[in-house]
Image (cartoon, rainbow, N blue to C red):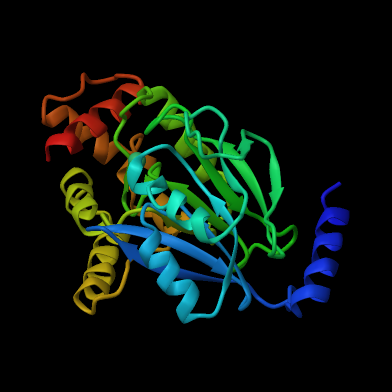
Length: 286
Ligand SMILES: [Zn+2]
């Protein structure tokens, strides 16, 4: 169903712009505000921006790399994810994809769970997941290439999953957030996780406090610490690394449950959702 659309679009753009749509796609990291990352997906000619909280760094990157903006992708309604949309639309007349149920008036192409989009201007198909928790209407985008796991899978998860952490529950319940994160852990281990904030080192300090003795976690602390010292982002991480080190994906682990019980935050034998909720509460004040 989706191939003909993409083929037609490619033919048109190739004719009009000499764009090489078969070229490999790249993702540029655009830092914004204090610790946000905006993700610019491009093929050398056309580009789509994920969660442009600020228009200025996007415009600067488009100019520096001589790219044409062809689409805007939003994950949820918070200002640091959508604030740059009006400024970009002044310069670029492009579709705005975003959640159907998160109250964003700027969205021209509303999306929900199970839908797939062909991103205009790029040889890029994305699956949409509903991931309520941080906000009720929050969505995530997954690039999945059939039969090619390695290096092919990208997850744009907004403020749902972070490096070694997860988003705060501003609107949803622990049960909802658990289910949302479960959709991510079902993705291939080598899926690259493009989350929207650089919170990793702070999250890792909490992770070590609740799961001492996790060797993969200790290794990540060293590796990500070196990246930050060198001024590099720790993002993207991978689903496999998060599964091995992120306490919010590991709340059923005996050592984490023990930490929660010892801290007086969980009754022995409590349900997994109670452990998840207690973990999230603890992190809020850690
Ligand atoms: Zn947010």
